Image (cartoon, rainbow, N blue to C red; front, side, top):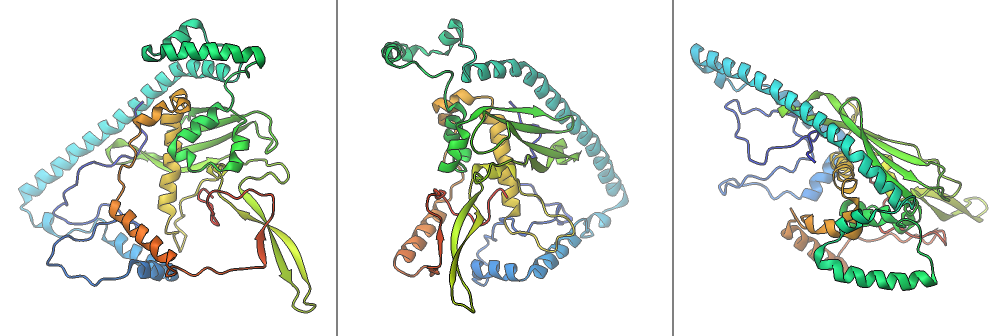
Length: 407
């Protein structure tokens, strides 16, 4: 399935125009490469110090963004210096390019319509998958035979014999228990978000499906059976795109919105309860109070990050990365998990994943050295607070997250 609504970037470098001006506002968090010319001498400025400087001076960040924004569209004078006949030809090429852009936008719209057409053909297959997973119907003999591979037939027959023996002792469960949880745990980007506490709730997933919107965008729908955590039977998340097309006719991602989860009392998986001792300054007596703090959870996925508004004086340094991650997770569910759920359940889809792509080994080596320094006592000091402890009985998440990734 193609991805017409992603704002794709060219895989090859783009040569600068003679005007030598930026096409867009350069984000402060962009990972620009340092100049590689050996003759350029730069001061070895500590990146951590620079990040700290920007964090303490939001006004400086705003000023830099303003300066960069003022460069957009500013001409270097090259085009104006050309002879009139040449400038006329340049204008003509721009006119031709506009016609090209119109065709690109039309192409993307037609691709989207084609996707919707075939999605309508996929839907009955997804519905049949739903009935088998949840034990409403059994697959036909022809479907089972089509699903077998020649090299696995011998093992399958042996497995069927063992299964029959077990069935005589204990009847098999209806459908395929924990199908969607198992599939999600095999999908790398989703598995990283699922904590042990989440698993108990995700065992009640009966279906994950999607639908297209009337406007460019799509909605992911998670369906649950009754459970002890929340009252929702469906929890959805909708990805919206801007009305105008981007360069090349691509649809531009705008933002996402998630449903509110109606948690049952004391069952909110996105927070944890801590017990904290407080001492009265006057009486010197202590008391124990319970506070809730955000914690890592897959269900933070339904509280997506929002892009900063134009009035924001400060911009979170990680907002772009969080927005990109949130969008990519939605795309992974839409383009990978839903269409090929059985391959993720069995783990066969993993062989098609390009693991380790884009990993910078030098970066990992640096981190290893820093870890060694921490072990030697040269790392950052930790503040020990004997007056604060996590409430007993609450399982601790895999990672601490004072600021939830998806909040």
